[in-house]
Length: 372
Image 1: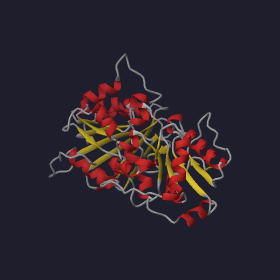
Image 2: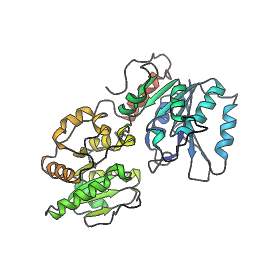
Image 3: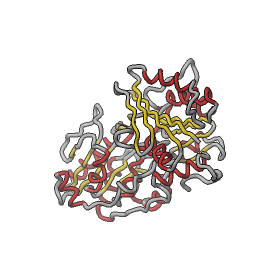
Image 4: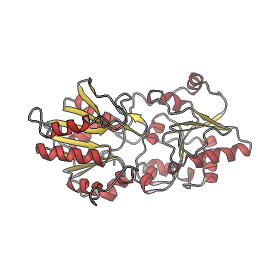
């Protein structure tokens, strides 16, 4: 079998290539490492330089949109007669999906649409000539991969075409770390209660609610600070008293940063976009053995039902900063931990997905999803 995996190079403020980040890098990398002939083509919406390299046998090509090289490669790949893929996987957005669909049909290959978010909620999403491209691609895909149970519930067509492929965890990187040593490495106080949040800071992520909760606790005499990392957004004051803002923390420094915290927050609000998502920070916090401070939203409850049940009285109402303050105070005392769901490593997820896609010779597709 031969796979062409087309993905977005920069997403969630990470570089899939240089940081070896997320499903767009990890799925093809593990397939290649297992002996499946796989090529990774990254579409670069931000840079200007093309890249062609290998990582542990995986051929990687990154082409920028700005100099039109991505379009030249699109046309060349569509009419390739040498080293044609049997399977074309698209991950990142609907425009990448359309390009992959065109290539797959031109080469008579299977088209696999990887849906890791509700793409029609992206800011750049537009209907083309009145066509709802997201649903068009979902209907045309030979198989669909869904990152969350919410997405799969809303759009799945049937067990034979659909696979739940959650965002995994690098189990070698995200491990329980020494808190005191981690704080010293970053230059943080050793005795202060630190609540950490790292990631996107758009309004529906609930970071504003988290900041207000910290301020409420501090006003009540609680010695607590917020350790905050991510790309700044307009209208959010990340420099208030009690906030230690680290900027957008490099991915290779995330395990140390997580280990320095007492509690890790996932303060999401309810929205169509967030409810259908599958945050990787939840599994990473669990892997690092840090207590969660979270809201009761489908992003957590649907994707981690057993863990949510364990935290049932320690989940805040979405959008309620006072209830979030209550949970922070309770978890600072109780320190309730939850266990990692089975088969959450990228290696397990990648191999199960390969089996379901029949990429591995000699194995019949299973009728089970990756995570039950």
